[in-house]
Length: 173
Image 1 (tube, rainbow, N blue to C red):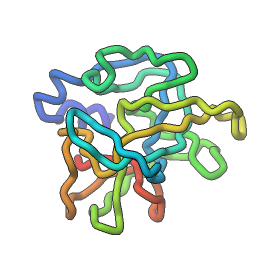
Image 2 (tube, rainbow, N blue to C red):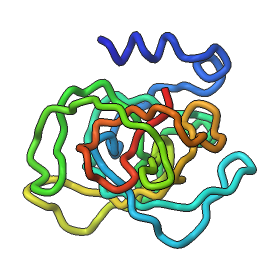
Image 3 (cartoon, rainbow, N blue to C red):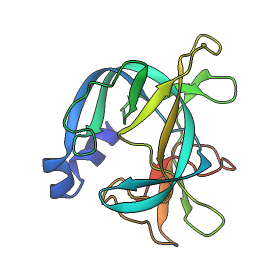
């Protein structure tokens, strides 16, 4: 319920123009970190370092940024969108056992970055790990899921990834 309240409090331009509900498979990267790929990714005309996160694939209702997904929840064959969900537990690395999602905050710095994987495409991995379908998701590092701009150093970041994870997936909410 807290997450739904949070969505209702988003700035009008984001909530009204871009949010859409999808139903089906999606990757949930909330408790994942991302590793720089050495490539760059462009989001709405702005360039960022690209990160890759390994995320579990879930099924059900999820929240998407329609503007980044061309207003379609349909992913190409072998792929899945990385989306937001209100689930309170999900499979998590390294064992991929289901565990509670635990919110934490940290301050963005030159040594502590973050990653945004929301509404970016992922490649489904060929084999299951402990019965969990995983996906390799690619998204920008230090990019705001709210504005699609660069996140300023010193910003507070919210994530479900544990402390010590490289570039935890989250946002400057």
